[in-house]
Length: 419
Image 1: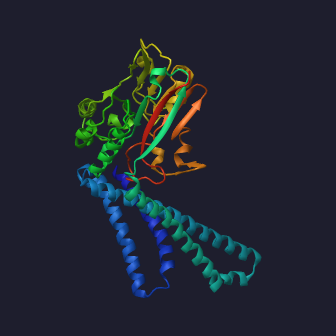
Image 2: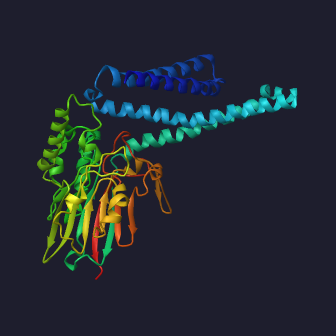
Image 3: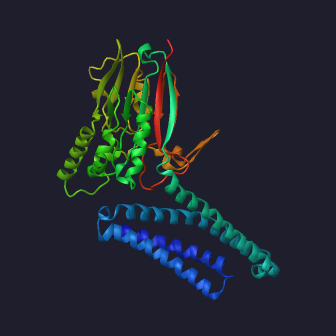
């Protein structure tokens, strides 16, 4: 761990040295005192970032730090260096152009071209590239800061009508609310979570389904929110499943026993909230003389870096498929990986996991996020013949405490009988 930390610090140091050349270019027309102050501020800020990173890894368990400070300190470091990448791109363009021009003048043997390096015209072009890089780098910086201030708790309701011939007439207009990826350990303003609960209840759902990732790492993260989440109720119940973060795999536990105890505590938290946790099992939702099938599995992913605990064979044991059946499975890759080919009677799969990467563009005609290069289905409704998948964008956040373009989601499904 120490070696990896040192390598990271060295890499960041090299980045800072390179960026510093651009800082000197931008500030060289200022007074000597201003230049010196800018340079001192630059290195002081970088030193603070490195100190926090080193402290978080080597000196103390960062979980013991003040939650607000920890969350926003690491977020600032992320934003700070992410923005530098854009600045570096323009510095590289400038340096590469200089190399090509140098080689060209040497090959041509034209001293006048070589002297262009010292002309005011070249300096102007150099300044323009560097200053443009600074402006471009400021865009993600400002966007991500705004995403923390306004995006993190900007809960958005997505309404989706599910039309299917198998939906019983008694279920026509039946309302299902899906929430996913709460990540309670990331919330820094607990009162803002109350607003999400209020929005859920205002939809007057018949059924509420939670599709995994109640915590980031430890079961204790959800304890401050037990009473808040208890308020989420529905006439036909609230059902939940586990996500990849719920197994405690991303925390260094003192022993296997401690990890198991944490997992047991998490299971108990679902019960304390009043949610029916489905561990590879099924249930029937009844209304009048009709019913629909509901299955819930543990995390199952097509990606090797995520756990595959889910067992649909176990979940469907003694299950009598109804004319319309739903599956809760946290990772959307499960749909293509197993559901489509082997379980044609599962008509609607509800997933989460991707968060839409908490970053992207969703405007009429454009739907884009970097996560789409990893997941074929990453946000919204997808269909293939008689089967559908819906990927919820997540209610919470992790890592970066904000949302840019992809807002936290509460999904409201209305079932529509077509026969």
